[in-house]
Length: 85
Image (cartoon, one colour):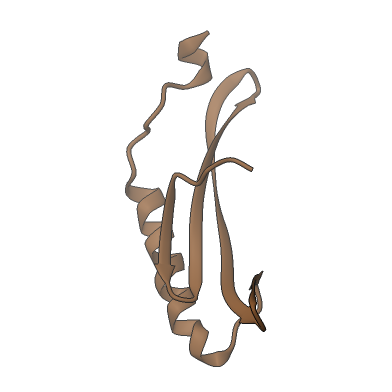
């Protein structure tokens, strides 16, 4: 799995932003996505889930809004594949 470009945390909830380069109709495009998870401990082992408790909802809203704000305000960090080729 690729490393996320940006991670937002409100323990135990986390949103990770990924931006992948893809060629669509012969043009290089950045395709953003957001991965969402909650960490919890089961005995001695740490696990992840996408299921939230009621108290997790404000934290989920916070990190997802941060991820959205980041994506709509970020500047393109890499050249498109079209410019490279």
